[in-house]
Length: 309
Image (cartoon, rainbow, N blue to C red; front, side, top):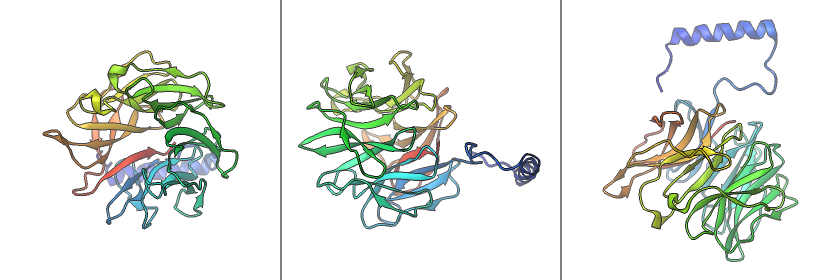
């Protein structure tokens, strides 16, 4: 994304300062001037969490651990980040929470099996995540303080990648309970009222509610037998209004929406002769499918971007 000229930036800063002087400080609910994207990267030889501005500048490192830090998500108030520490597929993987600047780390789950892929409830009090216990992958919810854990899915199929609806009533997730990957929703209270939203032919996965809760973004070709590359799709929250956003030979996996619902942050990778290249963080415009690569770092894998609300 091109940068504005220095004079334009200076003029905007002066105007903003004058407005603040006249009107007072911004209310707590006001948006920051430039929301950040948190993502994981193996630059430096290990997988850690980083943040950057939405134009790819302002890179900052949040973690520097011997174990992988992955799958981060901002809290609704932008003050905290939940993530998986210890590896996405490792039994050492656990859910942790920290402040937005990387301080104040605190472990939420502590189990002998993998817990990962966290999603915040809209009120910031609970976390939904995938847990690999009892030889199965299911979705659980736990308080941010580590209490009141409850299980939402009990199907023998694989249920994972939960995402909480903005009104707090539903959780969308990926499951292969029909034999191939598809998108489902359920009650966030007890896992009841399960509804299948996508046809088996899409092989859909990685579903994400838009900020207003009216749409869901997801990827197709999310299972091996489905064939084809991964593209970004959008549908209404009830499964209607299906529309393909990207249509390329490359891999595009949506991970989060921009706060205004016009774009999604996605993992992007070139596919050459059937081989998927390293991942990068990209931004996809939902209306047009236009994709802008933000990282494009040779030899480094960067993925799982989450846009600050």
